[in-house]
Image (tube, rainbow, N blue to C red; front, top):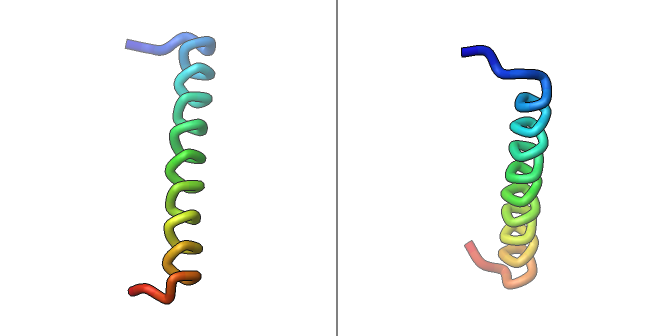
Length: 39
């Protein structure tokens, strides 16, 4: 089942949004850990 270009673009945008949210969350955790002198 081939996706139309429109669906592929929508999937890509959703993937990018999810990816950036995860990235921002991960970076935030790293910074917090560094500041608190944790693990």
